[in-house]
Image (cartoon, rainbow, N blue to C red):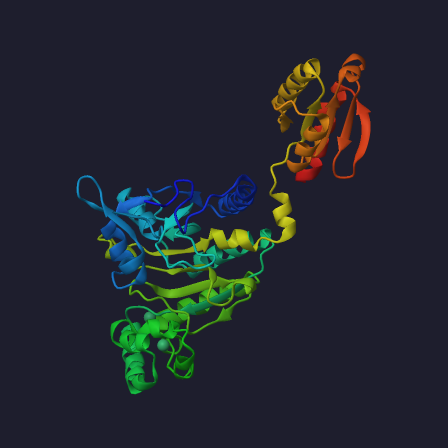
Length: 425
Ligand SMILES: [Zn+2]
Ligand SMILES: [Zn+2]
């Protein structure tokens, strides 16, 4: 008791209409750009069997160990609010045998994910991701295409970014490298932080992720996967880089960029944005050819990414935010009952033509109606009074420059349509 019912849960938030307009702008851009690349949307359930995530994300990770919203449902089955969507998409791909036919599936998703993270600024327990997965191909060109697709989404939104890439090897070359890495780490055990000492034995690749200052000199001297790739991995990575070069995409090779799970192979990438700092990648992605089998399915190659939508919206530059307003084309201000009736009819006719019209119902003074028009950022205000009704000429004010002139109803619709077309060009 004691917690107010009038407050949302910690780590969640209400997105209010002004904010949602920005989210819709990003989502519409994503849908448009992804369609150009042949991607189609998939919507998987938010609830899945706990085991799906325990297997795919790994039970010794923070996500599965500490952060999942897991509970028994009424029948006693353990279910979880999805902490990410790749496993769900791969499950759906296998369940619906989408590998039949051409074999290639290009899928994207947009939606909420749930992790009970420690309270931290800019981190939400219900957060949103946009992601895409290509299943059924191990072609390096498809990797470059996916990277290009997400970069073009970011640039269309005016968000600056840097692409970081690496290869994490494969089951042929990685075990030998990990052995070499562990040898080095054991030699330096006394100089490493506690986490790194533990990870040396449990998941030594993750040591490369360590952010503790005193570990950095040791990590910088460690052997890196990129120098120990087998011939197949080396050739794959060279071709991936070649496709990036041909698309004119700049990148930085970051040998420390790793993935902690065995099913990740070859290409890994991240996209960071200057404003977020290096620890906060905006996009993380890579190849996960082993995942389908981890889930108990037939082998299926996969490559994809997830983008943090909350962070992306935060990074939108001012001019892009300005586009994301669902403002009325016309606010109809009225004085008196006859004028109200007329406003109502005009609004109906204009809405039928696809225009956004707003009529206030609180019957306030003209002044208070104009205040509301300003607040709603209406593009134009039409004032209807008794004189105007008699003459069928109405003062129309363009709010951007306060220019005002008289217009007849027959001219009004055509004028507003032309203004709207200019704005959406
Ligand atoms: Zn290899
Ligand atoms: Zn460390």
